[in-house]
Image 1 (cartoon, each protein chain N blue to C red):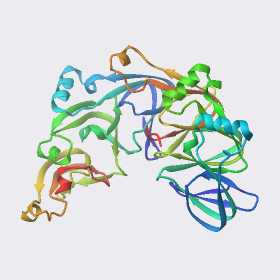
Image 2: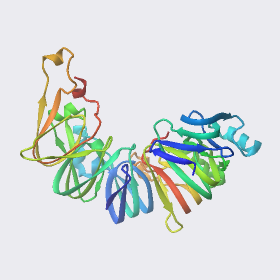
Image 3: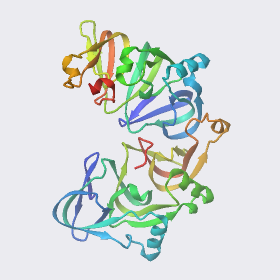
Image 4: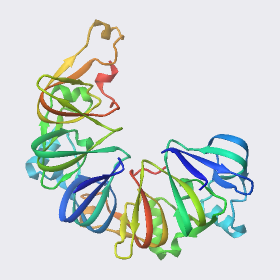
Length: 210
Length: 216
C-alpha cells in the first residue's frame, strides 16, 4: 500500500509482499527488508536486451519484507498513480516505485522523445496496482478528452496514461532560424482520452533552446 | 518556543535579554530590534576539553552568539528547516546541519567510537560524518537543515529502524546506533541494490530522515 508522507517521501507498508523501486532510493525502513537488484528492470532476458539497445536505462531493485519502507530521491515531489489495467508511459528517470505485480517495458516514442532530451524510448508500466512517479516541483494531472486535446512542452512532460495519441508539433518559423524563437519551438499534442502529468519545471532539451 | 516557522525554509527567532541563542555564522537573513552577533571563537561551550575535541574532530562549524532584544530571521542555502523541541533528552546531529539552537542547550561533542566501537568509527567514515558528531542536551529548540523535507520516524524497542546513511539527518532519545551492512556476493559482482550500508537505530526515540540522498 503506497502512501505519501509529506510531498517528497513515499511510505510503503508491506506484509511479506514486494515492490519495485529505483535503485538506492530507500531512505529508511523498520521491520525486516531485503533488497535485491533487478537486472535490466526485471523483465527477463528480452527486456534486459531491449533496455541495453534502446539506452532507456533503468536500475530497479526489488524490496521484499514486513514493515514500512520509506523512499525518496533527490527531494523530488512524488505523485501516486493508480493503474487499473491501463498503461502508464513514463520516463525511466521519473519512475520511483511500482507494485511488484505491475509489468514494466520499453516503448518507442519517436521524435517526441528526442525533443524531450530523453532519448527515443520511454518506459511503460502496465497492470493493476499503484506506481509512484517523480517530478521537479508538484506535478499537475491534466485531463484530455476527445473534444479537448492538450499540447504540452516536451521538457515539462513527465508521464501519461490512458488511450492517447500523441503527435509532434513544430512551431519553427523563419524567426527561429534568425535566433528570434520564442523558446517554444516544439510541442507534443495529445488527443484521445486520458491523463497527462506535467511538472512546473523544464528539462534541458533541444526544444527549450530554440 | 523561540523559533517560529515562517515557511519551510525560513524561521523567525525571538531574542530577549538573558535569552540568547547560537546560530551558524552567516545564517542571519534579517533582524528587527537591537540584536548583536558575536562570533564564538572559543568554540561554543563545554570548556577547554570540548573545544579541543571540536577542533580535532573538525566539528568546529563557526557559530555566533545572538543576543539583545528583537526578532531574527534565519535561513541558509535554500535548505528545508526542521525545528526539533528537546525536553531533557539529547539530540545527535552533524555540526554543519545545525542552523540555530537555544542558548540554554548544552553543546558537546561525541566520539563515534564510543557508540558501537570500531563499527561506529567505520560508520562515521562511510556516512561522511567523520569520527565525531555534535550533541545538544537539555530543554529548548533546535533548528536543523536538510535537503528536501524531513520526516520523523519513531523508534521503539520492538521496532528498530534502518536508515540510509546519506539520508540520515539527526536523532534523539535513548537510541543505540550501529552500521549494518547488507553486503553480499551480488555487491561484489556489481549487482548491488544500492543499499549496501544502513544505519540501524534501536531503543526509544526518533530519527529524522530527509527526502534526499544528498549531503548539504
